[in-house]
Length: 287
Ligand SMILES: Nc1nc2c(ncn2[C@@H]2O[C@H](COP(=O)(O)OP(=O)(O)O)[C@@H](O)[C@H]2O)c(=O)[nH]1
Ligand SMILES: [Mg+2]
Image (tube, rainbow, N blue to C red):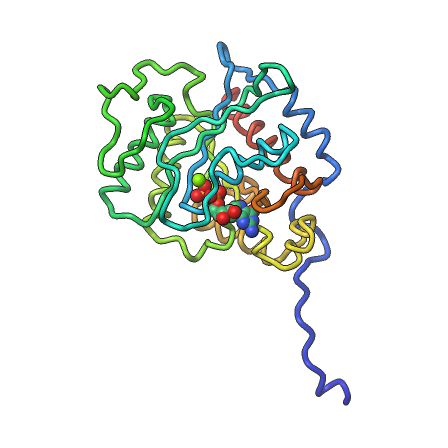
């Protein structure tokens, strides 16, 4: 017995003061902001959010989470996949979200881009070129990406004269929060190239980190612990350095991936992230 023989106490996983500013009671006001949002650009009816990132990062699940909350029921419209490399999104697809019972739609559109994997230099070059065409609004819905060649400007899926509603208004890189040190150099360089193209085109860029429940047992227990989780804070810092993006442009979320019912706190974090995505996009385009 006695102090010297007792086992060292494990270090606490949570810090005293939250490092992430998040008011969990903002769910309703964020939802109201999203419900009232109208794009401000001239002739602009759509605000286009382009999601890209590695296969399995949680892009489809993020889209499903947003649709689930706004349509008030768990939705599996964007096929999420846990079978690894086998089947994943190849098609360029826009997700529109119904608003209320009428034929109304929300003015923002979520686009899912083909997943990025550790592929060779040639494929990466094709991917970066396709991404640039997507960001400029040249690629039509339903186009099946070909990893070996970029969409030609004579193809029927190539839109010759994109309008403000076709172009991308914000680029969102989605990562599994647990993978900062697993991403190959080729993936990181590809994302940096895409980020450079976005900057050149005047498109802002943010990061969404998913699977925060798997980062830390305290966040798994209660998603509200994200704000005080040391492990999650480290992940945000790691991604900030890796991608070269400020920490305040990185948004951690827990997606709906296996839940059967909606949950107030999961909703709050996703809605807050969506609100920031819209605000950053608007700010960038109005300045
Ligand atoms: N634990 C956990 N799993 C998630 C989360 N988001 C997605 N997943 C799982 O991760 C896997 C890949 O997700 P998916 O949305 O298909 O990724 P995508 O390839 O980027 O579209 C699926 O098995 C999802 O159920 C999350 O926040 N937490
Ligand atoms: Mg997917």
